[in-house]
Image (cartoon, rainbow, N blue to C red; front, top):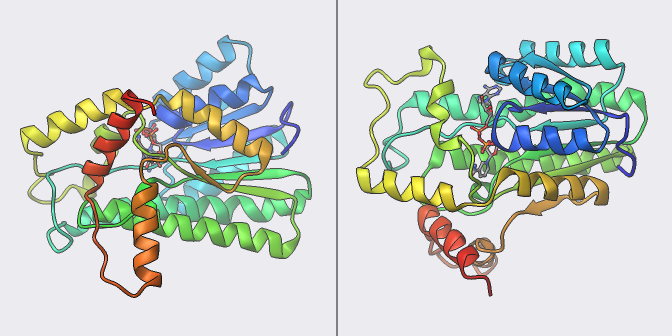
Length: 297
Ligand SMILES: NC(=O)c1ccc[n+]([C@@H]2O[C@H](COP(=O)([O-])OP(=O)(O)OC[C@H]3O[C@@H](n4cnc5c(N)ncnc54)[C@H](O)[C@@H]3O)[C@@H](O)[C@H]2O)c1
C-alpha cells in the first residue's frame, strides 16, 4: 500500500504488545483503527487513548478462536467505516509451563494454541479476504507468525507447530492473491523475542482449556532466564515501525533479527542435503539473539 491516510486498519490482539504498537503506528499515518482483542476492557482503553490523542478508532471485543466472533468483527468494521484496507492477524498466545517434550503436552495446550494462533489467522482470512477482494482497492494483510515458525527442535511444540502452519497459510494467501491478480499485498511477520506480555499469555486461556492438573510451573531457572530475555528484547514499537515499512514496501517475509538465520539455513540445508538435522533450542537461540543485540557487530 502506498497511501495509508484515511484508510481503515483492523488489528487483532491490539490491546497489548505488538498489536497495540501497530495500532498507534498506523493511526499516526492517518489510518482509522479497529482495535480488536479478547480483552474487551483493554481494547476499549486502547481505543480511548487513541481517540484522546486525536485519532479515529473503535474497539470490538473479539475472540479470534471463534469464527462467529471474527465474522462479527468484519461486520462491525464494514458497518462503521465502509471498508477495510489493512488487516493485521496478530493475536497469539504461548501456553505456559515447564519445558516439555512433544508427547508430554496436555491436549488442552494443543487445542488452545492451534485455536488462537492458527485458526485465528484462518478465521481472519476467511472473514475479510472475500470482502476486501470485492472492494477491489489497494490493501494489505499482515499475519504475525514468529521465528518459531521457521526454526525447529524439541521445545515449545504446540506454539511452534501453529506458527509453522501460520507461515504456510500466509504463503498460500500471498500466492492465491497473486494468482487472482488482486491489489492486496501480504506480509508474514516473524519476530524474534519482543518485550510484550506474551510470557503472561495464560491470562487469556479459556476456563474449559485449563488442563485438569493446571499449568505446570516453570523451573525457577527457566523463569528467570525467560523474564530477563523478554526484558532485554526489542520493543513492540520498534517492530511496529518495521511492519509499517513492510506494508509501504509490500515486503512479504519480515524478520526482526538475523540471529536465527543460521538455524533457518541449517534446517533447509539438512532437508536439501538429505542429512539428519542438528536443532538448537529456541531458548538458546533467543539468548543469542538478545546477547548479539547487546554487543552490536
Ligand atoms: N513477544 C514475542 O517475543 C513474540 C515473538 C514472536 C511472535 N510473537 C507473536 O506476536 C503476536 C502478538 O503478541 P505479543 O507478543 O504482542 O503479546 P501480548 O500478550 O502483549 O499481546 C497479545 C494480545 O493478544 C490478545 N489475545 C490473546 N488471545 C486472544 C484471542 N483468543 N482473541 C483475540 N485476542 C487475543 C491478548 O489479550 C493480547 O492483548 C502473537 O501472535 C505472538 O505469538 C510474539
